[in-house]
Image 1 (spheres, rainbow, N blue to C red):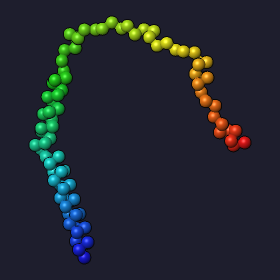
Image 2: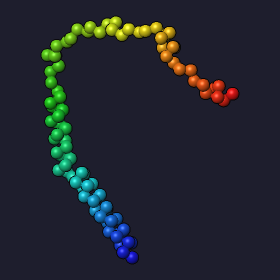
Image 3: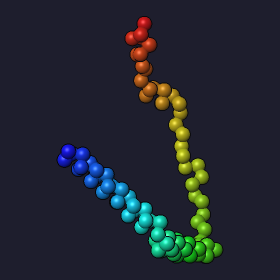
Image 4: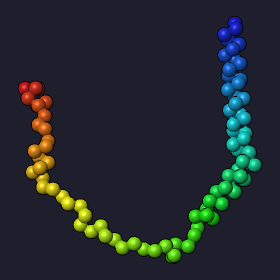
Length: 85
């Protein structure tokens, strides 16, 4: 008897919590504050990019590829097929 009433109390408590969260999240005050913050950050992002200096690209031929023979020697042979025979 006490266990069932405790379960009902928990269920009502969870429903009340969900109601408070959703009503706060979807309130007009919260939506207007969110839109205001979004617009402020968009205004900060919009700056003049023409004044940014361009840096010369000096990364040509930086990667040196080693030969495939070195990698073939490092690969261990698997003995799975020998075990299955």
